[in-house]
Structures are given as structure tokens and as C-alpha cells.
Length: 515
Image (cartoon, rainbow, N blue to C red; front, side, top):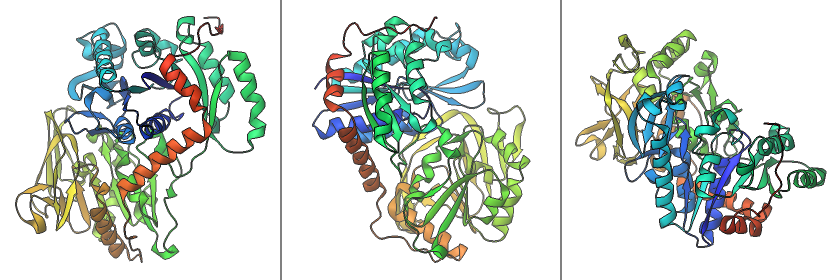
């Protein structure tokens, strides 16, 4: 099989990322060499690929599903919002300055200094590179292809499809309601040339009696001239590397049955306005008997067994937000009482004494929460890395994405270059029950994660014990297979294969939206 496919959606969080991963895994299981691709991503959830490039974490997850190393070409343009109007720009995995919304989408181009044509050229060259090295490239769109205000400069949805002749499937989330209107309206808002690339629909997150859905499937196919390629069920327990921070608004869940009611560990993650790399806590929720909840209330932070201050793209602004809600006092009371507090990247910087900042704000510096004896100094240079070391005798690997340099003036380093605290201090600080690190992904290390949670349980007085043999990587691979199984069982894979290899049928009907 050789070809390409673009997975678009009626909305953000319709299921594009997980369906792309499922299709990648389905193809890989057939021996097809497949690569994921997202021309332009807007997400604060990123990671460092083996080639040293910063890319969207969803694309790294899709590469893992495909069984290939993640690389810069899989996400050539990444926007990381810092405010409602400005974003940090990453091009081919490297920092490329700041971009305002008017400058990025307007005629001035990204960073108010270069044209959108250059970004389009970079994205298309990255796609062409992947296409030359892989049998199939499965592309993920962004938001909705029917965002008509952005169509002129689009390089990730129909602009990409038109530029490279890609077939497109449109995914709709039936759990939101109104899925048939969303599918029809998405197609109708596209111009005739764009509509010609849309070869079918997929309905996602269905639960209920399938017979009740059948009339709607027939009607939408008749109205649009495009088949519904399948209906994917609502898959419970899917946690792999979400792209959109909207997922933190959902109710929390226990990944497995609690060992006992008294043994359930409750983790409260502060839902910062510019939260980044929130998937750092996914591995915690993997453990049976661990309940992870995102919250913005002091009461829940105070009541939890572990309080986590996660990463952020706006450290100073989110620190002010945290204080305005009394969350600083809740964290301070926890520290005084010897209850565990964890800061990751920007959250670690907030836990320190002072943040010297000439980048994020004009104030020059800000007082931190004072829970750890560390000082942060922001610099223009961005640190990207994949460090490794030891926490005690336990090997730990992670990845770094930050501008701030953190210097400890007390406490104990968390990660060192040699076992049992030997060698150089690499990162992190621990003082009493408060811990902080700049390293993301550390809880994907099974022995480290279970040792840390055991320490949390001891301080919280919980009768929690880890389940032997619990493997983050094995659980993630099982998730990929679950997605691929759903593709095989619930989609018309023969039609999907034809679409990948040959594109949509010629002379498809054109819907008129009056535009």
C-alpha cells in the first residue's frame, strides 16, 4: 500500500488524534511503513523527539503507534500559546520567535517578519520528505476544515489537501450531539474544489443501540454523496497523549479498580490557565488505586494526598492567577504539614523563592511560593534535551523543554549522574515533602513512579501498594492495539485502503452553502 490520508474533524477533540494513531497502528500491523504528520499544531503539549526536535506530543504518540521514531518532519510548525494573542513559534523543532495572532494570520506572516508562504513551504517540504521515505503518510488536521475565516492561509486542513492531492475523511463526535448537522455543515461550508477531496465520514464515540443510528447514516450518505466509513464506539479508558487542554475539564477517573477504599491515592493537579504537558500525570493515573483530578479550588488541593503544580507556558501570569485564588496558601499549608507537593517545569519554578524574568513580563522578577530553595532566571535561549540520571538507585529518563535556568541553594538534588546521590547534581530539588523537577515524562519510568507514589502513600497515611509488573510502555502499546482493533472492527477498511491509495471517487456531489 502506498498513499496518504488526511483525518479532519468537525471540531477540536472530535477524535482526530486517536483515530490517526489507530490508523497508523492498523497499517503498521499489516507491515506498512507509515508516518504521522501534522503540518501545523497549536498545543502546549509537546515533547523532545530522538532527533532533538520539539514537536507536538500527539504526533510523538502517533509515531509510537506506527512503530517509528518521532522526528521534526512529523510536526514542522508548532504554536505554543502564551496569551490569548501571542504564541511561541517552533519551526522544524526549533524556536523561531514569538508570533501575534494578527501577525501570524495576517499579511505580515509569522513573527511579523516573514511570510506565510515560507511556513507553507516548510510544511510541504516536510510532508514531501516523509512521503519519500514511508509507504503511507497519515495526516491530522487541526480544529475544523470549515473555519472559513482561516481558509485563505490554511496549511493544515484543506490547504494541505489541495496542495498535495490528499483524500480526506471527516470525523464527528456523536457524544457531543448534533453530529449529522456537523458533518453536513462542515462539507457544505467548503468550496467545490475542497469538497472534491472529502471521501467519507467517520462517526466517533458512539454508545447505544446501533439500529437507531442506521437511518441517519443512510440519510447523510444520500444527502452528501459520501459514505459513512464506520461508527467507532465510545472507548473508555483511552488516555494516550491528548493534544487539547480541553480534556482536563472532564471528570477524573481511576484507571483501574482501587486496591481498597482506604488505599486510594488522590492526586490533585492544579488546572493552570496556560497548562502545558498535562500528560505528565497520565502515568500516575495508570496505577490501579490512583485517582487523578484537575482542579482550581483550594479545598481539593488541601484534601488531596498529592498536589501537583504542572507545567505552563506563562509562569509569571499563572503564578499570579494561582495566588488570586488562594491556591498558594493551600500549597503552603500542605508543605507545613508535611503533605506531598510536586512541581513540574513551570510548576517547579513557581515553588521556588524568586523568578527573574525579562521575557514573560516587564517586571523583572517575581517572588515564588517559597516552598523550595531555588531561584529561576529566564533566558532567551530554549533548553531542549532528553536527559537521564538516577533518583537514588533508580534509573530515570525524561525530556526538557524550558527557558528558565533553575539554581538550587539548599535541599537535595532529585536526579544525579550516578546512583545513590553520587556524581553531579543534574536536576530537581527536594525539601521535606516538596519536590520539583524540570524534567517531563519522569513518571513513565515504572520503578521511579511506583517508588514516588509509595512515598506519597506513606506521608498521606494511605494503605496503597503498587501492583508488581505495571508497565507504562506496555499499557501504551496496548492502547494502540485497542485503537487499531476498533479501526479493524468498526470501519470499512477496504474502502479506507482504496481511499488512501486512489483518493475519493471522481465527480462527487457538491453541496451549496450559499457562500
